[in-house]
Amino acid sequence: MSYGQGGPPSQWDPWKPQSQQPWSSGAGSGQAPDWAALAEASETRHKRRRLLFIGGGAIATVAIGTAVAMAVVSANGSNQASDPSSQLPATAGLPSPTGTVPSFAPTSAPPPLDPKDFVSSAQKDRAPLGPDVLFPGTQLTMGDTVYKKGPTADTRNCASAAKATLPKVLTDNGCSRLLRVTYTKDDIAVTVGVAVFDTEAQAAKAKQQADAKSIIKSLAGGGVKEFCDGAVCRSTTNSYGRYAYFTLSGFTAAKNVTEKDKAVFSTGNDLAEFTFRQIRRRGEAQASAAAAE
Image (cartoon, rainbow, N blue to C red; front, side):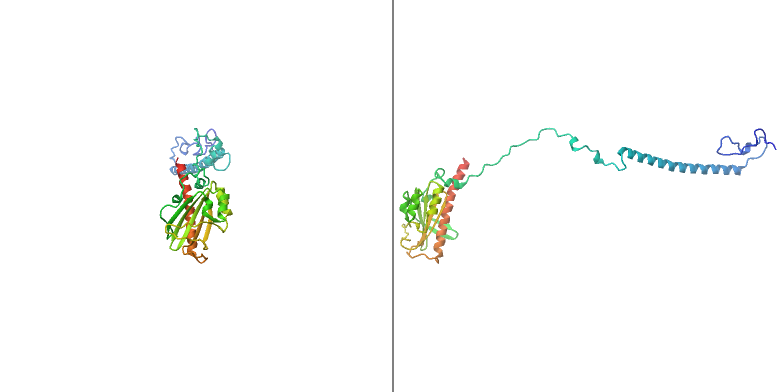
């Protein structure tokens, strides 16, 4: 059986554009198209398209992801993520601030004047001096104890106001003046003697050379009876700056002082402490005046 020129009719393939449709295999044959076959063929085409679209989308997604990954690797030059801080320039590469930083010369307050300097030499110690300057008023209070001020004395002949070994000590070291004052409380009296020298070294040496027999003369009068004249009394010796100061404490009843007489000891200690404070205050006042000039 012959099917015409060119051989047998080609089988219809929906994916081949040149393939012949079933209904055109014989022109004028009058045969009706097979609608069921056509519907089945159309469904097959749609299924193949959906598969192609799904597969193509997956392939495209993989391709895009690969491209992005390659771009990141190419930008960083490694497989590690980029660190934003690594993109900052090094310290040396940063621009330096313009302008000049102001500088200030170091300043410091002058050291405070030492009050002791003003009572350590006759050149600086120029303030008025006398028994009533060092020991003002009519009484003094130390703690709860009040001492009544008695007679005062001032002499340029230091040896004349000293006893036993003290006159020689004062003379040998150049004592130029000896001030004395007496204070009393009840039946106890104490005389304070302040020997004045030109330098601190002279006063310190006089203190060092004084011994247990180096005592000043007690000062009576003005209602104060004689004391420490033949009786045993308690004495002290000290110095500060160009001043050496001494105390002599005893009973106005002319009885001897023993170690049990604590009141006599405390009286002598109070007056020695007061004398030290007065000499120091003298230096403080002169230092303050000098600083204010």
